[in-house]
Length: 361
Image (cartoon, rainbow, N blue to C red):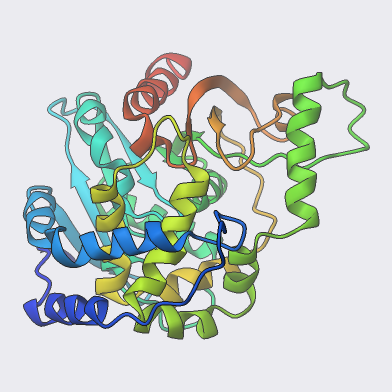
């Protein structure tokens, strides 16, 4: 059963957040630390004070409630989603999937331009936000993709496209593998390409530089990823009990992964962080790093790729073409890991171009 959903955070939860922020126990910081030891103290105190005294969740809540929200239960798990229908009755449907530490909020600025041509389904990953925490093992990328296939079936979308970045990329590619008869194509804005010494492909200097970046990441696993992939429950105690801990954990990702020229504003970032805090999904969202395997099923459907200059890694096309049926490839000089929030106009245009032009009969 699909039910309408309205966001209504209890006032007691908002009062508790304000109280906790006012009682933060701050660590010291060495002189001239910069970012050498982690997220800077002065910046975090600034964000925490604005979250406590200036940020207005109720205003954000009211704006979000203008969207059509729904929930349904799939495979024993509550699933929250936004479903925006295009004014074109025969429009293609797209399912847009976020990653970590994002949320359905990533797509707010592209709903209007994309809904001119597409029906949009924007779910919250199981364990994230208003989908609520997961309660059992096994909610990996494959299980999420199967849940998405069932969600689209319930909504009556028999043929549709999929788009995603970060975990959303893996989910979208896997959705193409589990429902190839329904998925007309997949568009991603994050597609890691691992070095392959046996590929026998001559790469350009720029492509080799991109692979060097991948090798560096593989040699020294990012600390956040190592913790979430090994001890998400232990980490979850700190993040669920301390709003400043949750703030630092996510704000650091935005600071590192956004293009400095196209940063996500504090208001939008704090709304995203509030979503994690107010739904107590720090631990359950982190579990996706532990549950999901490094390898995902092969995706047989046409693929479109958007590469943004300041993403964590940039894809190498000759290596990607060995694995996927690539019909569309774009390189952008601006934008980072949160492309739909950073450069929504570029993002929306590329998605539209792939599904309406590159896949046209």
